[in-house]
Amino acid sequence: MKRSKLGTSIQTVTSLLILGIAGPASAMKIVGNADDMSELENFSVEIYGYARLNASYDIDEEIALGARTGDFSQINTGSDEANEAGGNFGADAFQSRIGVLTTHPSGLKVKVEGDFETNGNGFRLRHAYGEYKGVLAGQNWSNYTSFVGYTPTIDFDGLPGNAGNQFRTAQVRYTTGPLSVSLEEPLSYNGLINGAGGGSEKESLPLVSVRLEDSVGALSYSTAGFLRQLGYDNGTQDDSAIAYGAFGAVTLNVTGALNLNAVINYTNGSNTNLYRSGENYGAEDGYVDSSGSLELISGYGATIGMSYDLGGGRSINGGAGMTNVDWDDALADLGAATISDKHEKNTSVLINYQWTPVKSVTMGVEYGYYMVDEVDGDDGDASRLLFAAQYNF
View: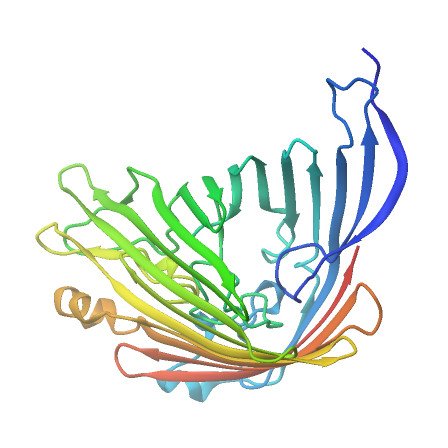
């Protein structure tokens, strides 16, 4: 059997990248040919990614995480607002990314991608999956996620209430046309609140999700739902319940330059799927009451936004998003000492200007306003400026 020979053809492949959203803007594509038809023929390997600087100036108080994203959990509320020390600057390049994508005419695709976003503590795996004839296995965006209805932001974490959980998870997914179904590793950012019954969260089954995503004329839409078994077991007591949720998202191209975006999302018992609820990324899924019964916590979220293309690689984007978690039953069962400081509502308004001065370079500046409302009535807010410079390859 003859050895495969690597072709010498290297070309630049260009695809759309919204600043801050996953996906290569350009890539080095290496095309290979095999002498034996039983081996790989016309396979390709794309190496893509970007180097990115994120810089933030926190006007009221420092609320920055890695990649300079705004963190709702760091917003001072109530009397703590009097202790704010404004004027905080910071910058990092943790969001910088690299990926490898291999494709074959048979339809086989394999992708591995990572970045340094987690506070620069090391390389973080983002994607690692294979896909063939509509069957995907590995780590990818959750099927309960969509970028339909998404308003481009400089803040890497985007608006609260964006469609689905906006995270990647291990899964097996099947896609046929606009319909996709998946079995996924359930995501729980904060798990359960342990009441007198005690017990930690237990996963017995994968999360099941179904998504329909398509477009009709100027309207793009996406809707999805999921079911998940949520449980706990402390050795002497156990209980379980069925958690669920659904979202709808639309993008309407009003003119060639203007897009309008909107999302609405509801979850019950799986609030990591209610993006940026609770302290920052997901409220608790439920709690165990004094009798040992598992009670679910529900919430809802929504976003609205617009994008206007000014031409010449320039755009203006603005949006508002919020999440609201229903703590009433937990407050009654567990008491104010446990629940009063929980985030009931997270809200942000982000407005940015983005431009591409030369090919494969994108820059942007953004004003962000963030607000938190707690169960006990305390609230707080913070304003900040963000800048980003992204160099794609």
